[in-house]
Length: 452
Image 1: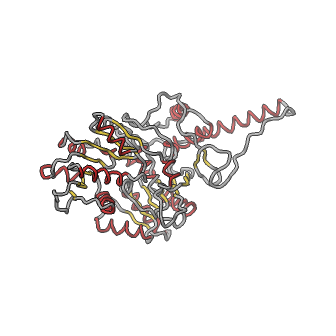
Image 2: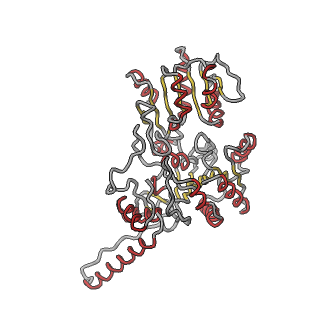
Image 3: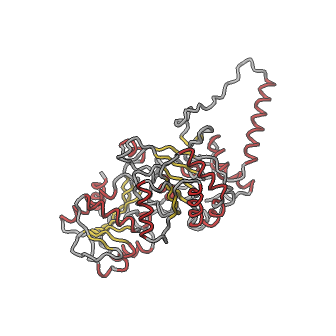
């Protein structure tokens, strides 16, 4: 039990612990209960979030559970009589001298905790017990949270939450990437350079391909599309509208009233496609949302999980819901499927020990429906049967066998020769069971930058 786990960590002398659990685990509900229990002992709790949407959403959850609380955010008066406060981290930092000292600090989306504002909050209350909440205990670049937290408490897996009904099952489609992703630069924080990605993806023919994939795999569904830049997002929304599919773009500069109206229209189905960059990755809870479109390649496992799983909230009005994930940029070949069993540590994302280590996530891509799935003789989505290699019988003459083998070698070499980007090489390696070192070697030979 996660609550008991946190209690034991504190009893054993730890002051800061992080609870790890996928979206759908009910982390806010757990924290509301813990805060109410702390109040019965006379302890004050500060629940810190980093976005206005999370303020509103957390407040509604606390109110639904009859947990009275104050709000520390712009345009809200401080009610210091409440022992439980839900706070915007930006506002809390500006009002440190006005906030009664909390005994417990809860950090929502704790993978942001290494940022300067979060560190300043923790430094202001060094004696407080700290609990972090996150689905991915690593920064966007993969760095760990060991300099903030002393321990991790691991919750249920995505597979378990799906089996319990806390998350909807999903279908994952990864059509061939038409964008040229070869040579993308990696910036210092570990992800692809945003400007370069936007230049590759913000092209009419590529966005047109996104629309075609949407119409094929999730026609009529409410989908969030994750883009590479504001301009790319605006262009994508415009092209969806030209295809008679209601779509809007929102970003951090969109006025709050307009942003709230867009999300409201998306919830009620008047808008089918909601385009953004990174705005709708955390705390966006729309159970009726049926699909996501990944139109931005990323090397960040944290960002990938936050975005790919956004449509997997169960919907009481649609008990048979199956989320559709359309990966138009091959992120699955870098990070595996959303419900992979991952090992989390305070050291961050696990690195490959050597170039000879095997790839972590073996996958197959169905040539008929383009689904990405774990190795199986039959596609679980369209029931396509993969051809079985027939063994050559004893009547096969040596010359014929040699000719067949030679032709197969030529075909395989030609497939590698035509590969022009890392994504294609990753797909070949996955299909053939090659190790990571093979991809690195081919990138060297072809002078394709290999992102690290």
